[in-house]
Image (cartoon, rainbow, N blue to C red; front, side, top):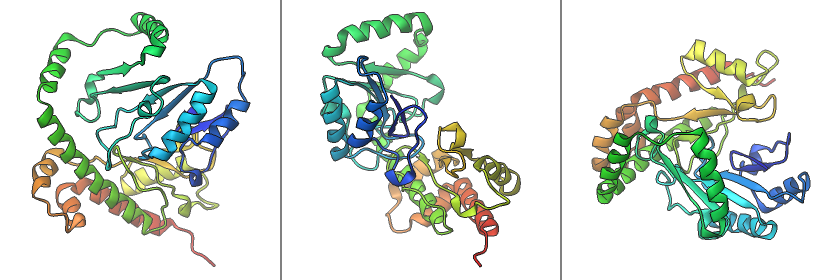
Length: 300
């Protein structure tokens, strides 16, 4: 069972953005009808989600739990952005502990992207499965270099500092996500406001026309004409052909400047903060807005 951007799919099926790209009990049940009932199922979800920025609610996680428990589905829950959520993170393992494998790491919240240092948490009920996975990993990947392991261990001894670091980073990303969503929405670019991570999945359908029929073409023109690089979700993220959704990452700024200033931010003028301390991002959003306005077909 494939799970794209939080939406359970059967092979070759697609779901609209109106369904918010999240799995729901009915959607998973429908996907199961397309699969061999004699085989054990594996569901993969990602929350907080890349590229949508969605975070699953307690109600959604409980609904997923009911279906997974009913059909004895093993669920791999990728929670690598868990420390970068606007609200408190809730793990699927809290509701479905016996069948959930939590995968996470230090690449995102600890700003150690190049290290690729991660791990998985298996429940005792899946101990045999864990041994199989460990065996497969031993033949396909190598252990993280020793200096990285020592570095991570030293960092984990300073939990209070790490928690403070995460709170600051999350606050900055919250401001950037809200800024991006608000300004693009003002020119007709729709999408759900990011709730976590530093990604957002806006839909640029407003510029679709006889002269501009594909999202790839739009992204190429945005790069050449506005100087902003975006990645089309069609076909790179398995979205339907002709959809104008893109993967938008809003961290193009000097993080050190924003990090040093966030403690003094009083919360009154988010726009001014982003423009002063996240200037490249703000300039990029402005360039996109200008391009969208210039290329939106005029209504008769």
